[in-house]
Length: 160
Image (cartoon, one colour):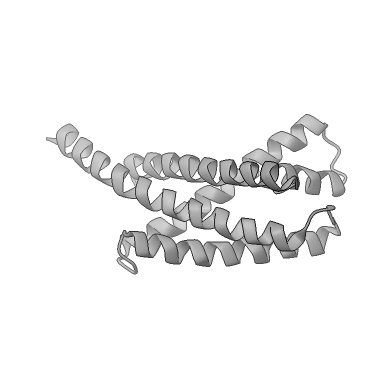
């Protein structure tokens, strides 16, 4: 993987994770529920009784959230680069559905393993999480397409 691809994936994951997080924050406000993944992640860290400051737990929640976003985008990149799926809105929707299911199962496992039971409407949380992943995947697909064109043009001009 060259530096252009790594930079592309970092930019895409930042944009897609930010869009997903914005959606979760809007849903939290609209439904007056705690649907904020970074906040829930920092609460999970608190439940695990790590001997670090509250601010460090908050920072780690955000960092972990963006790292997971990068891994999702990296997986999408492999799927697209190996021509398993074309870079298209349809593949973005399909990846969003798959990512949504993975996200829901992951949070179920996290809540089960850590015994952390936030006082939230779990049905509402998982429904919003599913749609948040749809937004993530669509934004990632669009950004991938745009950055692919930009980086291909940039690389062509730099190497010639």
